[in-house]
Length: 388
Length: 69
Image (cartoon, rainbow over all chains, first blue to last red; front, side, top):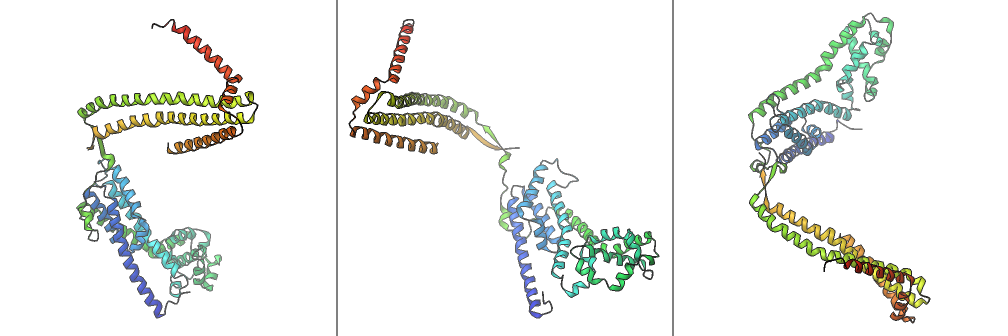
């Protein structure tokens, strides 16, 4: 349990808040600088636009830490931006004048801003679950999904159980307050909030005088008055963000002040797959004139030991096997058998070595000569040209 | 290729060592190269090979008469 009213706890909370803001600032800087590094494949202007968009995203966010958690890592964001950038790099993916990568950042920002308040509220709930001050607050304020369930509940026969003496919004609010009790997270809090008198009133269906349509209308009005406020705020935030976002991206602002200045001076790199290999024709012809005869001569020179090693290896191997076969048919003395067996083993070993030498000459030496000649030709006679 | 070389050289070394030990024990126990050679030449396997080599030589000689020398 937390002792929230004590002075040390309050001081600790203040320190923790300061520490969190410091960490958030550092993380934001780090996030943006790493993202700027990862986006170095883009054109300088596009990269500055992307960084400016992310900076605007952080400026729009109430809680930067939550925003950082929503955005995950700079690598994830860079991958998404890179995909969008490559898909619409040649201008075919642009819609309404907004480049696809900016559209992607815009979508990410919209999703992140719509997710942020839910996370904050969940965190507050989690922390203040046993706090007395928090218990006094209505349960439906803590969950954005309550209104939909309340609306569905208001149309059910249970919603007819509103007391006759209450007005329509109050009855709807009472119905709404009963719904979170079915929620697995809010069940204890909501059960504690409903007084025993209200429970008896709600549980009496015979006393209802309001028709179902009035109840549902009352639920709608109550929802629009109380529960829709966070959603409206969210929509307002998102629309504000979108307005600022389009303005900032069209202006092509410079890099934010917290971005390292070395990144701004960094030259634009050309992607590897954007280059073409172009042959230097005269040099290639000259190389072919010299390299092909030389390679063929080397292959012929190597073919002689290859064939010799194959023949000798086969001869040694066959002789060794025949020697082993003749041991038990021609010799009666053990000492003679041992000598013939020893010589046969040595012949087999030499035959194995020669056969392996043949394999090495064919697959290693000759293939290596050909590969080296081709590699040298590619290295000397071709040049890499940036693709247009 | 390096692993192949290592494997082959290890196997060759083992076979050569075994062969050397066998030849050494054979000589120490009273054998000799002459006795081993005579036994090999008299064996049916080598007799068969000698016969086949003789047939091969006759075949080559018969075709060499048709070749323009």
